[in-house]
Image 1: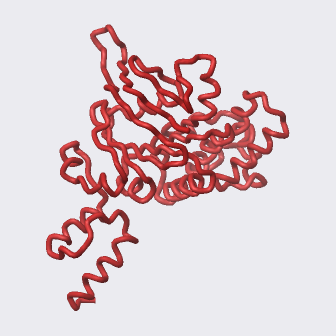
Image 2 (image 1 turned 30 degrees about the vertical axis):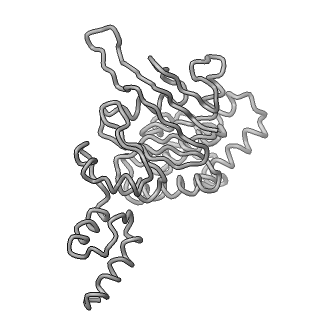
Image 3 (image 1 turned 90 degrees about the vertical axis):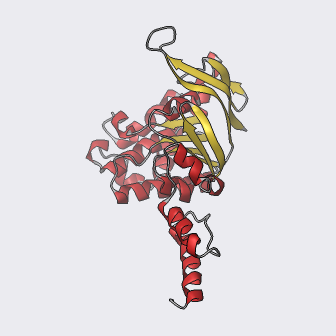
Length: 286
């Protein structure tokens, strides 16, 4: 099972002087259970692309298939949006009910589920994002911290039972603690439920430690794709696209200039520590 984007192009305000092509013949597949990162400058087309994945936007050319079903199939669009959960930037701005439980229940209730099934989904979704139902279900979402509100918004999407979770800058505006909590919950969720996750982010460090595969967008096209380790080895090409690499990867590349035995495909500080200690031990500086 997968989401297949096949030769998709999309233009805002076509046929007018303000026409802007923001997706240009994009083809990519998101496979069941994988963790994919999508990065690129503001205006590269990331947000437009992800809105095509559940039929919020429809291709001008090409097609998008979700588990084999075309998003242009109007009668199937409700089922597609249940399968592909999309969490926008600042999703807490979409919270509106008087209690957390009612907010999370909104989507499942629209599916016509029984009250028992709705309650079970609400409680499971809260537990999944690390918010105990006994403590949070009856609270007003507007009395929560920014990180907690973000988790409630994600729980509302999870309560729909998606197979694919698409997150557009899920840590935007959060303090470091809230950011780490959200990313930890997402990583745990992806592993435990075998969800396919597409993470849109500007943070090279975040995608480096979380995702298995990277897509790099530039001016409406996917310019680079591959495993996270492979992509961040293409530092010069990324630089040409106006992007950087994780700071620790950059440091290890610099260290490699004086110590060729040191690996340059390091993505995290945890990976770097034994390499650096081995180098220091070999030079007598440990």
